[in-house]
Length: 136
Image: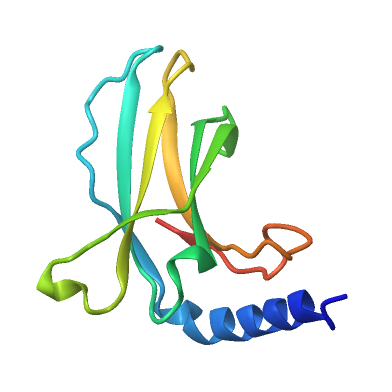
């Protein structure tokens, strides 16, 4: 019907992401309280330098979890978000965008969180099919 437009869009997306990925960076810009209780709401903001990508070309994921007795990481809950704001300060000419999470914390006990940046396209068969991920 569309002469393969979605496949062509995905191919262009993959080319752009692979070219820009080395310069994609992220940083947590929210203050995090020392303690968070079950039932609390927590807003976390991550600034991502896109290095020429479009804001919708990536997703930022927040993973809550715990260290296991063997020292490995066990993810308990995963949240994903797309862009919510553009940083407008003069130093944002690099395409820095803010990705925001408002989380209702339901987990009890000592929890940790991690963030990762992943490519995001509606035609991907799997969210991690490009094999690209940046941990923050």
